[in-house]
Length: 295
Length: 314
Image 1 (cartoon, chains in turn yellow, brown):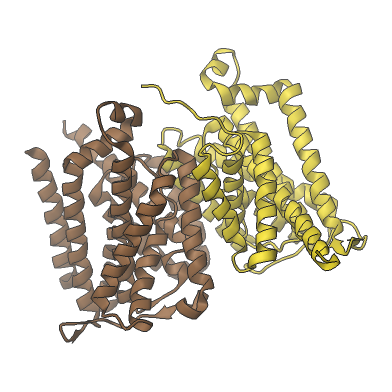
Image 2 (cartoon, rainbow over the protein chains, first blue to last red):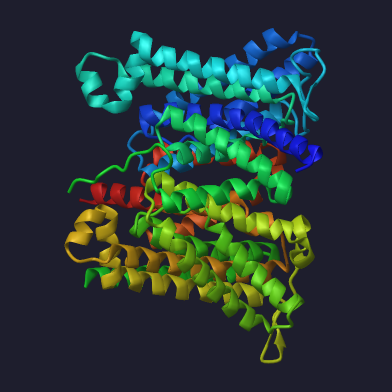
């Protein structure tokens, strides 16, 4: 194997892990909402889009990147709050399929709002830090990739600490395991689920904002992110946060190597092909357990 | 015998609408829109067999619409096949692919099944988009109108009647399938797979059967769509949004309601036509409508209304 080949592989690995980290964060938000409500939220990618688009436009308006990113995350969080309180909570009695249609509808609605408030063009965000790209064994690693990785590690760590160390976080776990028992223990399930939506949306928004300097963003960028996030969460095993992160990274790496080594036109195909194969062999995903149905 | 009567009544309503509509509409434009309603209604009725009766979701059903549409396009453009043969070819290919992928996919449940079917639909759309040499790529491909018994079918009226008849036949077959032992088996699976298995239903076989049938419905709808429009693109046939629309038609009209699917198709076909006036607001309004419908009519339009009437009438 020549040096050039090794450099290429390193390049694929680094871009795969970077985009995989973004998928992982979207999948993590997906998992959080799924655990608290058993709703597969197809608008999860649109939180990322809303965060990124808001940040891009506020930065264009003259605000520095960091306050803009906080604002963008806030907008995504408010969208999450609105989604739960205005749509999902009132539709609790719907069958699962209805809820799938509902969140897809919410996703299309978010797209429509973004297209009106912002525009229909592609946008990029300047890199967060001015440092040039890092050369490593012939591969080029953008500094923003490091930001995405560091950000993902911080978010995953913070979320883990939140759900295991704080009372509120434990509340989310309790609600996800047994909402009725949680109610009986005196927890306000509705506010805890609201919190889960706000946190998920904020995580999604942050993912979109961190990725915006690397991947372009536009009003319809959310759909493919939702699909990939959903797929990553399934790949890992639905409802398992560790699985969501691993699923996201695996998805990103498969895509980068498949796209680089085999065909870039079919980049997206490799991810879904792998999912079909994994689910055929292991229907519950990497870390999922088989739920037994009782009659 | 009540159920037979209600089935015949539904069919009669549908036939009456199809027969009378051309007398009422002022121009060919409306006739074309009605044609599209019948075409998508056919696909939705098929998908409802899978979702409403067997309780299995498919977020990739437009993949089969794409296969049906592109087989008539490729059949006539590249292989010189007569139109009708291409339609049958598409249906066979769809059935074969459904049988092949259905076996592993249908073992999955709930959201896992959703993501697997989504992946399947995505792969078909990607294949159609990328094999530009054959399919024309993202810009699409023109479909010559077929010649049947030396008669070139090209007018809006001809396709109106063909789609209308196709829909009536599709609804009739679906109604009979639902009322047959297969239908009972499917409903048992919907309620509880384990219980269905316990009373001797071959769950895997029945699920596969209905998946194949629904794929054939989608494929035939795709072939019709290609002929009616004369031009097809990957997005207009096999795209993810198309799959979403099909699912929305079924859920909006009502899971398990055959006529509801046709109504759902009518809403989703008419809406963009109405909204072209407010072009920039199209996404916004479509999304809002989907959300509002689920919030206000959680079990779908037709069953919700039926319930309401039953309550006030009693």
